[in-house]
Image 1 (tube, rainbow, N blue to C red):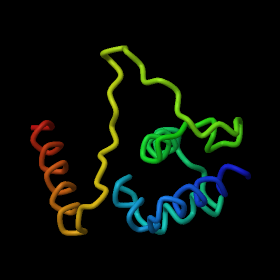
Image 2: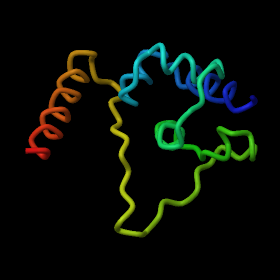
Image 3: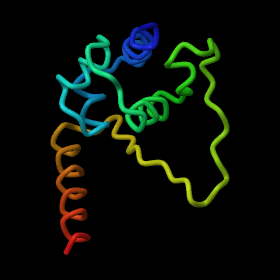
Length: 110
């Protein structure tokens, strides 16, 4: 499918590795690689995170438009972004963030 190629191209244009994007999305690098090759279906919430990460629209990633510019963000207070911009952080710093989020999730379940 065309959008798998666009996802790889936009990542490469941003000089990011698959491992960096996978860390930001909180998925395994191999899983992310499967998204790019088209051997695994991309869940809608991951596709949305990829669009947010690269400041584009899901429609662009899916090949429904050639316009890279994202749509305006919703003014609905109930809609909140769930992507964390970890650009420029070290792998160790990203791991600390992942651990913190995991701890928050565990605490909220108690």
